[in-house]
Image 1 (cartoon, helix red, strand yellow):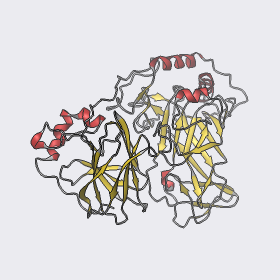
Image 2: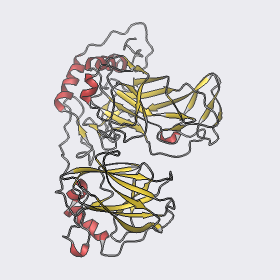
Image 3: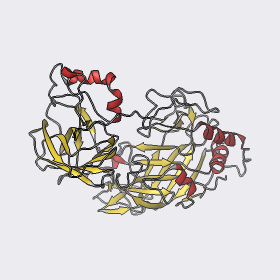
Image 4: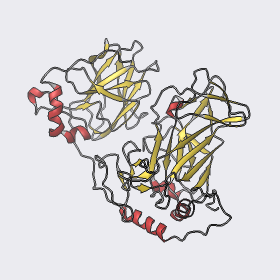
Length: 488
């Protein structure tokens, strides 16, 4: 979309100011987005100025260097339905938005309170400004501005599906909030796992530390478990599974968008039957209803919903495998309670022709007999069905239950097949095998997240400790293929 080159910011102006601000007001930029606006008056703060890229959460956005007069970054690639969330801001009666657009369709930017569907405070019309780096300031009035610290969500609306606006900053009525820094803690290594140094930048907002006492107790219980004697000459593959069906569908994602109902694309949820935006480890553990067996597994798993001809096609079954791809399985430990992670990328929108990585495929007699008209989906024989497999990393940093991108606390084994370096702790290798009751046609499919390349999966773990521990010890550590009940 952006064929227009960026304009270099004026010398000795905002480009230099950003460098000054990096040390002088790093706290302010990270927490609330306020910044020093003019290098010629380095201590002057633009009242209420909120940089667009200082969001607390977002959907559909990317940042880029800006050609606006004050330099720095702007947020771009914004299309209808995308949004930006800002926490702990104060809002006055007059608000401004600095926008650029080369879209003839235009649209609006809505400022809403709390969520994407919250109270509408103000809206800014978006019209063509003459280019993606040709900037204009829009002003709106809030008749009754809310008082105190607020959560503000900017929602993009346009009649066209493609990108229609860039944002550089908002000015929220001339009131500057007192910046606050995210709480940080020093990483603590669980007593019975290898000593580790947390990755650089692995404290602060988005990093969730494991509770050392709870993790130590869980490990102690696991280490004290006796092995189940191997009988029936099982296949020597480290594996057990949970057999799941779809429980419900919601536009929620408690990992990426916690406490923001409706903020995500549609997901098909497996397992715990109350999973929603407000889900926590405690709510999962307390609820006994699940679409997975065994019922000792209170975890929640989810994937983007698949559509065929505009109608949702839910999997008839998903097998959630717990295994190991490591050369030595004996060091594997259970997932800590509340552990969460994601594999895949909902924003990856590329073609997936036959032979490309990350393919949907056809399981069953006859297999694949063709491709969709766009080449991105298989067409299966009538005796086969559409299938996908998602495989998660099998090594952990030993410190965090989650990370800002929900991936950086886990990683692959090293070249020798061991967990080492930043990820020294071996965890079960999780894999979803998803079967859809359809063979497909040349019309292909769509995911709620877009193209086939955007397929992804989320896992939020909440097993009963004894049930998970025995399965890891008996089936993975001993390298014996187990069934859903955890027996050989």
